[in-house]
Image (cartoon, rainbow, N blue to C red; front, side):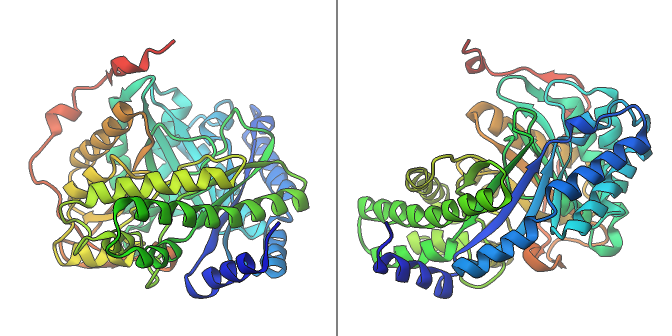
Amino acid sequence: MLNMFEVNETNKMIEQEMLDVRTITMGISLLDCCDSDLKSVNEKIYNKITTVAKNLVSVGKEIERDFAIPIVNKRISVTPIAMIGASSCKTPEDFVTIAQTLDRAAKEVGVNFIGGYSALVSKGMTTADKNLICSIPKALACTDRVCSSVNVGSTKTGINMDAVALMGKIVLQTAEETKDNDSLGCAKLVIFCNAPDDNPFMAGAFHGVTEADAIINVGVSGPGVVKRAIETARGKDFEVLCETIKKTAFKITRVGQLVAQEASKRLNIPFGIIDLSLAPTPAIGDSVAEILEEIGLERVGAPGTTAALALLNDQVKKGGVMASSYVGGLSGAFIPVSEDQGMIDAVAMGALNLEKLEAMTCVCSVGLDMIAIPGDTPASTISGVIADESAIGMINQKTTAVRIIPVIGKSVGEMVEFGGLLGYAPVMPVNKYSCEKFISRGGRIPAPIHSFKN
């Protein structure tokens, strides 16, 4: 039972410390939409999404009103489209029609993003996988709400370097296709290693094939709440600091659990998972970087940053898992540059660079996220960055990802405006030395020895 103190405490977190439920994401299986006829596939996809998710947005608004809890986004994830279109799509252009159908359906039900324009190619690529990947630049350029992801590696299978090499080119092509909008298409494209099946956050969400026909996943977020809480632990030892973060994460996650249960009940769709991730926004006071600085860093990027992030990530998980019956997705701390004012400031003043961000990804939720780089960066260099992140994920048995934006026409130090939750970012320098010969070898990097656990 909640007592009045807990109610008042939660109200304070919402009103003063920017606590919100970042997203209610409805996962929808499209496996029953497969057909050899492309027109029929598109009709089935549109009809299923608009039927199953027709009340998602209205129910989300009802819960906001009834509980006074901000729910920032209502979203949909679907079965990876490379699977759904395998029988009917013979060319990349065929897959683009499905992207357009997803976009129409998303607009009809009123969600801000729909994820799952995806391919899972950690061991190899089918013809359908390759066609979908080749369609991504056009698909993201001609749609507004479609998000795409490609899983190129896993701890069990190794890293598909053919896919890595291809994705470097696809990222550049996507940037070129959307260059009139600061290459915004790349902000809707994520390349994964060990991608989770139940991630509610965009742009990497898709509905895994092991999931139910439909599911409700919720992502909670409260960097401002955590920062305010640990201000009370200034000068205290690590034991006090860790306990403070744990207890705060517990309170934040309880809010998400309440919203998830209500959404599940009102929509009559099973509850899936709570994602515990601390997801920042460009708003002042809603920053993961500011949490790390409150822990004791002069600026994020200083020596000690990786250790501070590891501590934060672990304590968030320890506190959060006690507050929810099912925890999944990514769960930890996001470190996107453009979406976090503290990260933006640290990059602008030279405290934080790409290499330090890569080190931080060893202990955070995901990986290199929302990073703007010069538009003339070679495709092989982008592939090298993807390979490095995939190696971190593969060896450490964790999810890693790359959402990198080569901004056509922009160079180091210039500022790029993406808008909304995507924020803005300074263009960061990339190592100028080539990895072309490494990337062009082709084939697959084998799985690590510790993957053989059967």
